[in-house]
Image 1 (tube, rainbow, N blue to C red):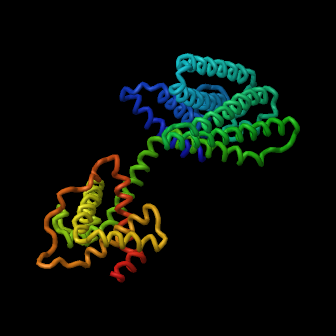
Image 2: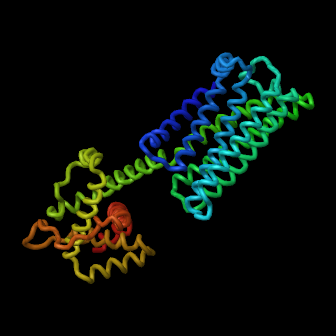
Image 3: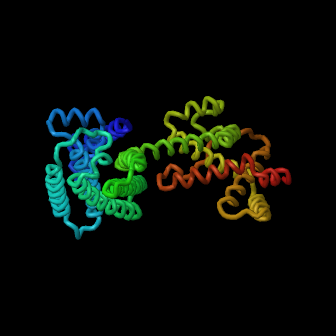
Length: 400
């Protein structure tokens, strides 16, 4: 009964997207996406055996749900194809969205008419909600109906696999690309399902038992439904994952900067808006206003670096640079290690007749500029890492 959780997942994501339509959003791609999700949810719901038997009994048409589930699956595949074409159309102005939509609606209507006509040729058969294809694939009318369904559904899945994979590799947003890749894999699984159903028809004609393939068909259905549901909503849940990852990165950065920041605050108290607390209290407080705290910490560390640099002469800077070069360091790591060496040396220097510097430097680094925030955070983290654990910094300090 994996149809039940798959149906629940599909309806959940469908209603999540339909809410945007209820708020007045009339995006063509969104409408196609909502249609696809509703068709997918209907496919999974109708295939639930108790639903299948009750709907058939209510409409007095045996195995009508077989037709309904197949048409819903085809509606899902057509809607996905339409959605991806519309996404491409929004970038390629040579294609007309209205013409694409009309073509898909006409194709869907034609397929529905053909499938219904073939189904009406099937004589009344006992209900088979769990194994309709396997049980009746050997009957000519059922075989004709299933052959058309498999060819159309399989062809759509081939097309969707190619389209989704190709469009995911173009210049789209990260999570839209992830969703399209997932949709491509889901479509490929649907193609495998079509192949298994083809084996059912051929095996029934040849009198060969094909029951062993049924678990494969079910696995393709359920895996494809889950991947399709997640892929269609990847931009939504992907953005939340990115926000969580960014928050964790900021939190870890704050924790890693704390030892250097606390030491600089003790040496130059004027750089901090608030005096350092214990690291435990600091990490607990960081949970609120984290981004502001991180940016403030970077600015205060840079202010401390500028203040302490005044204790050193140019010959010390040249000495630190030469020492780090002899150690084989290059690039950003070299610059961060040189800065850490200078900090260590400056903290060991006592200024006669003066205590800690209580006034912050007049010129603060512009780390609050959003265009340079990420670069500044990485740069200061490199300095903090070298300051706390670099053997080169320890060796330079002992030579002083």
